[in-house]
Amino acid sequence: MSNSQAAERSVALIQRYYAAFNAGDWNGMLECLSDDVVHDINQGRREAGKPAFRAFLAHMERCYREQLRDIVAMASDDGVRAAAEFVVHGSYLVTDEGLPPANGQKYVLPAGAFFDVHGNRIARVTNYYNLPDWTAQVAGKS
Image (cartoon, rainbow, N blue to C red):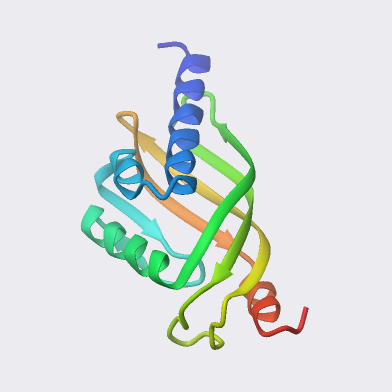
């Protein structure tokens, strides 16, 4: 496989992963991941494995309703490293531990993610967004 094909394949994988996210298709997201996926949660802990990722998705579904827009995905020439930038449009549904009280507040937040890709599966997901900006939005201080 040429380098450009490897990069295109990784970009298509990332696009499929986010299409599943926007469709609420958690199984579709999980199909994009390696069994031993590493997940670096924004300003939080590192988790490993699909069961931990599935639990994270269930937690997110309970507390938030989100859609990602303006997604731009890119990959290194060899397709092993990838990144995506997007804008999160969300609603804060249920109070998440350690965060402000939820009452359906809306938020719009730029975000990004970095990926390792092995065997046409995502082996690492590292998410980044500005938590103080999100907190200010849901606290009504933005």
